[in-house]
Amino acid sequence: GDDDPLEAFNAVPVQRWDEEMAARWVATIEDGRYQDIVLPKGTRGVDLLRLSAQRLSGLWVGGVRHGGGEGEGPAWTVDTADDEEAAGAEERRDHRDVGRALFAALRKQMRRGAAAEAKRRWAKANRKVDVERVVSLAREAA
Image (tube, rainbow, N blue to C red; front, side, top):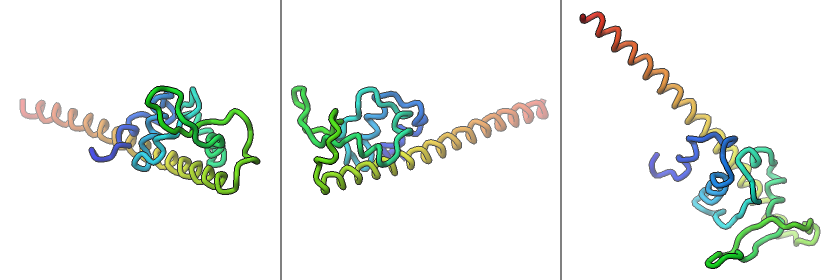
């Protein structure tokens, strides 16, 4: 309903999300739990769909850094070096947990979007039927 911040994302299929929409979705899921995650530049919805839970967790191997702009806080970022082996077991586990959570949330969003699309199609089809019925009733009355 209106209280659900993810409702707005149902209007556009994940495959058609642009970079901004994908980033806003990540910041919104689980009541903003992942709002500090920064997706790699250019990441769109279709790119997220191509990643497994393990690959999603690999996006944030670099851990937390401080944003470069004024007023920016800590942000999860992509590390350009492959240093997962250097990361501690707890950090790797945290990254896996984030990857799994994002993967599950993305799959849930896909289901929600599909359900919303089916509902829109049903409403459109029934609206058409109602118009035809009105026209038919008007002709009968004439």
